[in-house]
Image (cartoon, rainbow, N blue to C red; front, side, top):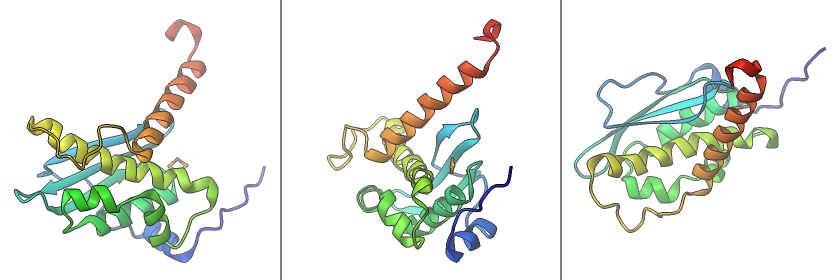
Length: 168
Ligand code: FES
């Protein structure tokens, strides 16, 4: 069976081939994961955050597709130097998709997952410090966080179904 290649634009292809800020960060302040290893679509975000709550650097590891790698890469560039509040408010999957020059619609969710991991990391930053979250950090999950949760749930269900009955 032959597969038709997806119509990725040159910017996506370039970032897929030469991603920026790829790799583990040993001195990260916060690490967050989104996706599920069972289906291969998994992304980890590392953020180094200073006392003024500014993101000094960001990196990622991804086992997702070209769209996921490219969007994750561009997110790490967009948020560098931003406060957590600005990153929380300004970085949405739509903005990231625009920044990258568009994605095929079947690949929108890959960018959503990247932004979901970022939002999770920001939420986790306050949770792990044990301080009260600021007012701008909505208690309710953002669209991107909800989507990440849905994908994880779906992946768990699928991997259970694929296991032999004895292992379930
Ligand atoms: S990250 Fe799963 S298809 Fe792109």
